[in-house]
Image (cartoon, rainbow, N blue to C red):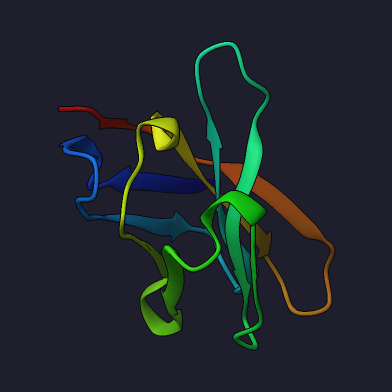
Length: 121
């Protein structure tokens, strides 16, 4: 089994910054990709950002230029630096990882429990 634990969520004022962290643990040979998704009230879950083991990144259009994803590969940890936060960024943010349990085996996807981010005055 693999567990993903998010941290760093909370309440922040518009224009402020927040940094989320996600740590993966368990039976892991390698992690090919880690990313962040979010789901606001009455909204579909959407991609925020992801990063591959090779360092390639992708961002959702609404966060480009404001959010930055990074990874500490040796620690199985991914970060999301969120700057210039807006009220519309309010959502539950979920960590996702594609994990390979053994060399050459198929990938398995895992999700964290989510962390609440609220942007409000």
